[in-house]
Image (cartoon, rainbow, N blue to C red):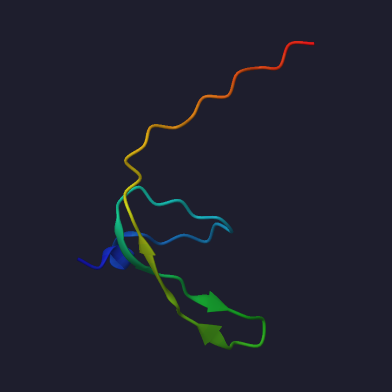
Length: 55
């Protein structure tokens, strides 16, 4: 399923939570645009919690 229709964002670094194919459309000040696709996979590993450094 193409999930690109589910996300619209003007954020510089948009985040997605569902695996799938997304299309990133970038439009320059001159009106030219590109729309490459990005495949997002599911990350099955839990996040690594960093421990504070004690000095």
